Image 1 (cartoon, rainbow, N blue to C red):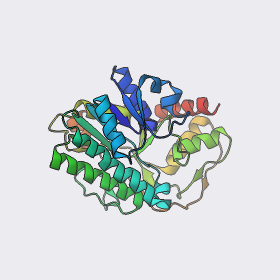
Image 2 (cartoon, one colour; image 1 turned 135 degrees about the vertical axis):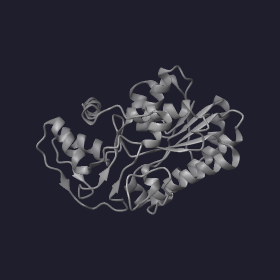
Image 3 (cartoon, rainbow, N blue to C red; image 1 turned 90 degrees about the horizontal axis):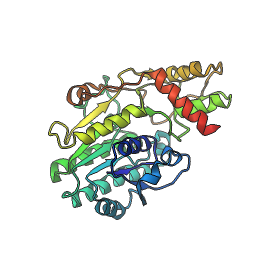
Image 4 (cartoon, rainbow, N blue to C red; image 1 turned 30 degrees about the vertical axis):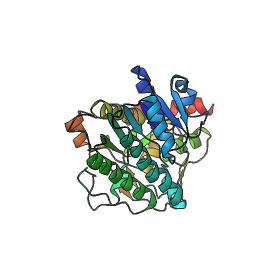
Length: 314
């Protein structure tokens, strides 16, 4: 197994799932943040580590070749919408170049690689007239982050249909849980602010609606795609993963406030740029084809998430 983006929120929990099944795991690490769950948990000590970035094709080729990776999970990305708006070049370098580099390395080693699972996003769909998003919708990203994800999906599909690279695409909404160190995101940012007895700040007006899906449900979805990678019903396909219960930003903030017993009101700044107002997914295809469903309810998942950040910030 080879995992890019292994120090991120999903990568850390996915590596734990893989190790729990006695997989031989190699990871690509760009920045070894000691607060990452992969490092804090000690799981990195059980992995083969390749240092480098997805922008370097030959680092990826070397990792896949030397590790003889049969399954590749491509999670490395610049994932912050605001960063993409401020700096589109580096976002495109990581998300677009990084994707075709990874897929090219897999194409070179098609005799080794049996499955490639590519992390995408609901942002790949762009803005549409009717929600929820379904997999048959065209990809119409307009702003930099959305475009980078639309490109990711199209490139992945191209490598599958043109060269037979066994690619499957996973599209999720807003992923939350312990291990997310991007404090500009609403869940970790709100928890940290409230634990510090500070008002949480909202970039938007608070009414934007999103899917919020717990990282352990996402890790399980990736595992399932890996297990089914050779299945003709899965290979070359994209799957949405969602608990199908969209919430406004204020809804998620108030849920965290309730669980922490906080009366601090959010600071609504309404300065968001380059963001679609409402985005949420249908997971019907994942239910029907993969028998996948989200298993964590919001309160249970948030309690676990809050506990993780309490320990981190203590």
